[in-house]
Image (tube, rainbow, N blue to C red; front, side, top):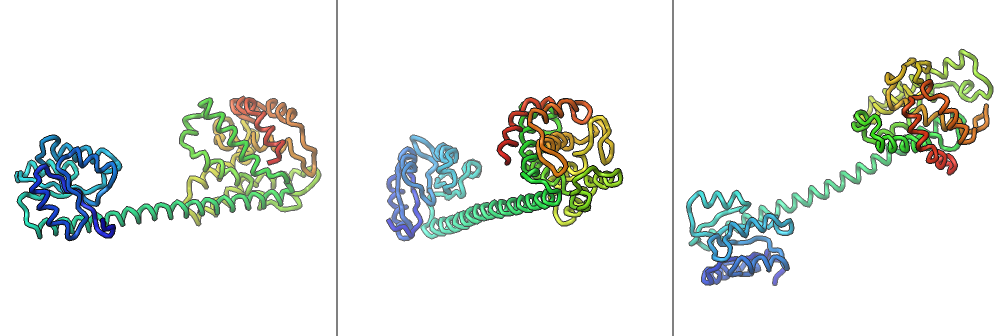
Length: 358
């Protein structure tokens, strides 16, 4: 068999038609002739042709029935099929085309007509295959490019987070840990179906990534305030309390150069609301209860827990058990009561993250 040639399966229960067909086609194609539908189906199990010429009126199984089987099998469904038939009425032709045949040639046919129709259809199929291959390659390129963009975005986020940590004299990857804590809480909430109506609309991975910018507003706070080892004055504390709003401004600025609105919307909410308190005594807006966005209520627990267990220039880090007790004591005052209950359910996972110093 010449592998440079197209391969055609010719199926007809009339042996004379098969001989004539082979004679016409053999000069240009690899031709395999079969006198029944069952032989065709067995042959397809071993070889896939470039085109099938299929008689309609056959005794064991007619061409329409064969075509249905071919189109139902994903291994064969893309093989182009041309019907050969002595039936010339439009209803029969329409039935064949509606089942997926690409053409309908009436017997007896002229040799040049048969060859030209086959040539045209093989050329079309070749172009379709090239287009499919191009589409697959393009999709792979898009996926690779998307992966690269996501990796770049994550690298930028990580770098910005580390920049904030360096300015705040925070060690131990606070940004990364709080993101992991957030993931733990969201996973447990999903299990409990807590706040399901709201979180079901979220892309969890996107939300967790955006949380890395929750403290980005500290970039705008002066070093002599941010790094002060002693107690802040009231004026200095008022400056610190502005960092959630600074963060929103930074994120709005980023938004001028990207269309990734969902990501930035979550990031802005995390930045602007993670210091709000359930009883309304937080900042910067003094929001109360469920008026505080869920992102902010979640990050409040993650942020405070990590602050409690971490050593700072002005304090030693608390033991995990003590940190849990402090958070429980602020259930319904600082924190959403239901989220505190979730935190208590998963506090051992928080401890594991903290101990591993991730």
